[in-house]
Image (tube, rainbow, N blue to C red; front, top):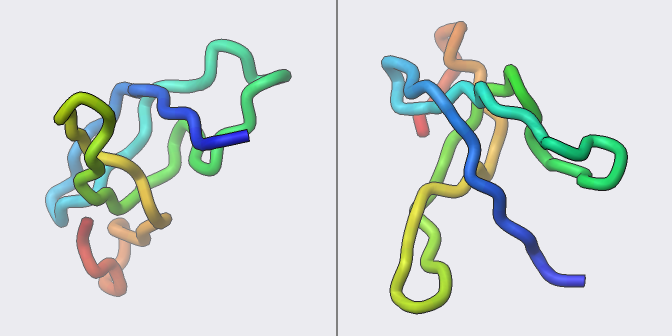
Length: 70
């Protein structure tokens, strides 16, 4: 099975990371790498038909001094 992408609501932190505010509509059947409340670093990803967007790629610790930003 290939990757599946789901847009979620997120809030950008001062350091450039994002706090995920949204959650899966079907948590029993959808397994997400990152969930509501996680703070993540993102990268630009190219989707089909020349569309692009941010994709979470790692957890961040932006609430402490060790965060490297998004």
